[in-house]
Image 1 (cartoon, rainbow, N blue to C red):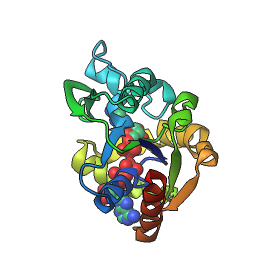
Image 2 (tube, rainbow, N blue to C red; image 1 turned 135 degrees about the vertical axis):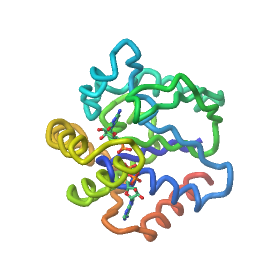
Image 3 (cartoon, helix red, strand yellow; image 1 turned 30 degrees about the vertical axis):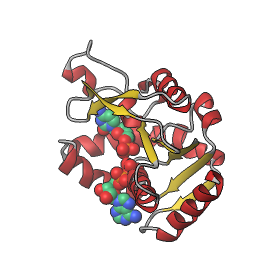
Image 4 (cartoon, rainbow, N blue to C red; image 1 turned 180 degrees about the vertical axis):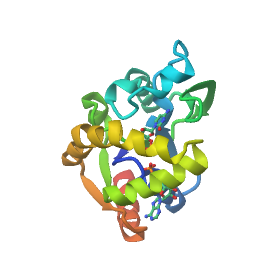
Length: 202
Ligand SMILES: Nc1ncnc2c1ncn2[C@@H]1O[C@H](COP(=O)(O)OP(=O)(O)O)[C@@H](O)[C@H]1O
Ligand SMILES: Nc1ccn([C@@H]2O[C@H](COP(=O)(O)O)[C@@H](O)[C@H]2O)c(=O)n1
């Protein structure tokens, strides 16, 4: 099994790059663990309290569960990945059955901040996109897909997202084996990643 970590700031295009990699590889060869599904369970808090959580700080992530499930996949076991709702700011209580495959991708803004997780990655990829471009993408996505409005996204950007990006995410670029520039769709980089994956699988 080849375990690939993919990180980079919000809106940089991690999910898009993951989907491009999946499309380039044979069907059923890739399993994805998304850090977004491992936000801590906060059912003990009210909705208003949940909106105030700093979702860009490593403490918001249940790294214990993410690590445990990644290790289980590595040992050939199927896991139940939690499903998260960005509208409710909480886990839905449902899970998705996730099977071990030749390639396991773990993607998320904070996955390179955790040393134990970093140790498990055979290849670390950082997707690099300018912050203005990321903010524009984030605004469009959060308004159309995550039930947010302009003020919510901009306030979160100023209050937590930008400072956390500079403190925790950007510095983890130094751990990357490959940096993918993604201000534009970058099919050349995806081709290179595909070639490396195929070489490592032989
Ligand atoms: N290279 C790109 N050029 C333009 N839009 C992009 C590009 N990559 C991703 N997007 C768009 O930006 C938004 C955020 O991308 P996404 O892959 O969800 O980022 P992330 O997973 O890093 O938050 C999505 O709407 C996606 O379609
Ligand atoms: N309830 C939540 C949880 C997280 N976020 C934001 O999601 C971003 C990470 O996801 P990407 O897919 O964009 O990498 C992160 O920046 C959090 O601020 C949220 O808005 N609400």
